[in-house]
Image (cartoon, rainbow, N blue to C red; front, side, top):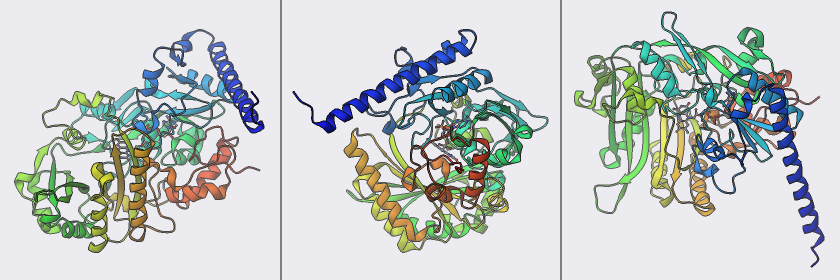
Length: 527
Ligand code: FDA
């Protein structure tokens, strides 16, 4: 039987690519074992022939959209035990042309820490998760593989009045989170996690182990919000802990459309960013069944943390947002660490030990983000409600997080994260689905894209801003190989506005050969 010429060429090319990647892979492995001087590194290398390969790979995959039989898998996973092993991995990978994806908590929304279109290895930071807290001087050193839950737990173990302004989900890794900004319920008081980083340890493309002083202020600036994956491997962060009162208050008040949710949400947009800095009220929008048989409605959950007792919160609410009708029975007083459990969705009375659990329910999802600078009129909100009645929105949620307070005081260029004064709130759009297969994926992804298109008149423009920690490849991506400044600035200015230029400059100085790269890494300027 004769093969058509095009098929023959393809088969030849495919076998060549397979042979090349097998070569790369074997040479890379050989290099690792040779250079380590002893066999210690072999204990932390996983290839598909190793029985633990799949469990190590899946241990921190959070999105089943990137865990299908057709998802490209790494040739090797290495879970280094220390700095010298990271240096060996980087050196061997460069020598043998192996692309490396660094993974800390694996929460990347587009799976960029564990999926790549070219043959690749995962450098998984899971074994590097030491945390040391210095209560007296209010700082901590935390290694990148630690989760936020582990960090919060360690802080609470030593102090009831110190906290840290980072994200809501305890299984997030600090490696990716801090390098993309990182926000949670106390951002209006203290800004982002990255705003509170005071030193870092990083291994650069040349294998140098650098701290703030030796890396210099440009690189130290870039890794606090510019996305970790472009500049090196961040091993640890030194963070400034912040004071929290021994009693805080939480509440969640649910209102559906029959209970005036549209008017309340409309009003919320005028006050949410102007409240006292101690008060954070976000809104979660979901489609729910109405009390009228067979009808759907939209629920707005006003979900809040106040840094103080309810004796102070109630008069504050009466003064600034009386329309919500908050009463004492809606409020629960607790410690700051208990509020972490509350926002993570754990029932009251749960042991703090749940913060140490790294497992998370995995499901398929797609997310996007937007920034709102002017209140959306009621008619605009009603258009959102219509989209919640569509079948694909059964498990969709919009999370509206207020800015203002400390967020407006920090300048747009202090760190690469530029979304500061002028933003009332950020929207995170999320759609989840349990069905398998590409048809279900397409339907749900199309739903969120249609909603995003509908929102265009109501959100920031030129650029339409987005949050890098809510990674979204729809807004633009690099080519594999060389990407021009112009092409990368399509997505780069949405995440970083004018800071994109400085990030490109830092990248050009510290990683001119573009070793650390992915679909949305900062490109160096080629000379
Ligand atoms: P992951 O390991 O996937 O890394 C993300 C990116 O950083 C990748 O490009 C990776 O290569 C790179 N990277 C990771 N470690 C690195 C290292 N040590 N050195 C260099 N580069 C490194 N965000 C938020 O601000 N507030 C919130 O409340 C939430 N909540 C939330 C809940 C859930 C369920 C998810 C899935 C996500 C969030 N996020 C969030 C978003 C989260 O902040 C974002 O996905 C972070 O980048 C995750 O960091 P990980 O280390 O877990 O991811």
